[in-house]
Length: 164
Image 1 (cartoon, rainbow, N blue to C red):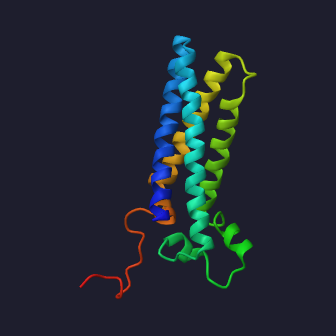
Image 2: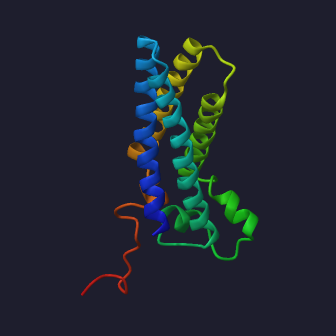
């Protein structure tokens, strides 16, 4: 269940990053603070969704949930807890997810900042959203992170778990 929540959170983060980029561009072009503010809200939401996704991956490592492909390939039950937590970003998929966590975290910090001029902030939020779309999209569609956090085809198919 936690792994499906993580997969959903990653897809939600991708959608919110698309919204962040589009709304920030529209807000900058129309000089509309409401549109730019919606882009900032999308940035905060994307960060929260990535936190949930990364938390789901760490939970899978800590609980040794070997039905998750990434955990099965990169962990074992005899590891101390600190190595299980660190193992979450030890694989290619986990390190990309950690990078996306940092990327969206900086975007959320920029969104929460009140010191930047309107035009600069809207442009920077649009660029941050575009980077989020690229990296989160790569993570969701091109890597095997669907097997790392959840989604179709991630459950192990042993004879005991196969139907009939």
